Image 1: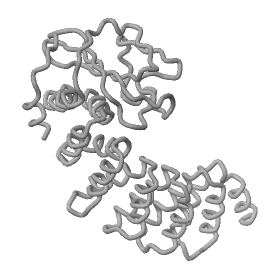
Image 2 (image 1 turned 90 degrees about the horizontal axis):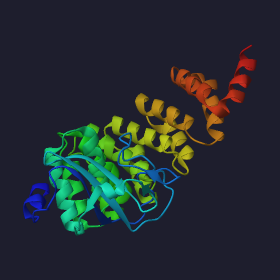
Image 3 (image 1 turned 45 degrees about the horizontal axis):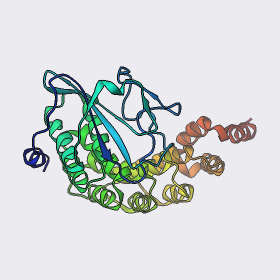
Image 4 (image 1 turned 180 degrees about the vertical axis):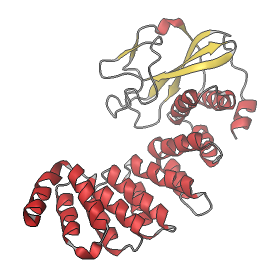
Length: 305
């Protein structure tokens, strides 16, 4: 698909050297990209990646601008900025007109000549924000190439986060048994990070019943580190009924990550129960790390002493 997009695309007139820029339609939910709240940005600033300013603030925006620096006829670096970013040296870039499909083809084709992991990450992030069905298809192909774990992980993340129901359904398919376990684990984490209620329902189902146990353990951890709504009840229940030690240890860790004072009380109860054996050590370790766990630890120490 990526190769076909590149071959089908009419040649784009790009300089051998210098910056070019094009506007692209943005998917729903696109917030500030490329700059912080002060709106300042510069092509001269090379300390930037896709996460700069991608904090869920600003916007929403219906379009964004992609900047590419060419060197010796090859793409050297890529930036993306939403309209609320004031790119001080934007005039360095020659503006070109690309339709969304041609933009997808251009970016997809450049994955074949990528010079660095950083370039790939920003390119996939930009691709994921283009409002065109071809972008979802390209991301699906990138995600399916499990030989390149970094690219595949990036594609799974953006499919879940920015490509709507279609993207999330693609990621859900990647949690299935035909994929290697590490890949399935990345798909589970991508669904959890999306924060979408339907995606979180899938993660909850995997946490309770999926095989093998390490996949359940990954889903349990994902519910905790993303502080999924209502996760405490799920995690406590899983700790009580799952027979795999790794799953139960991850449930203890995940409860400690929640912004819920009740989690400290549950860990305290686990520590008090001799039947939980070595799991009590894990509960004590993570209880000590919790902001809300100090009082519970004091209570336990008073009982011991």
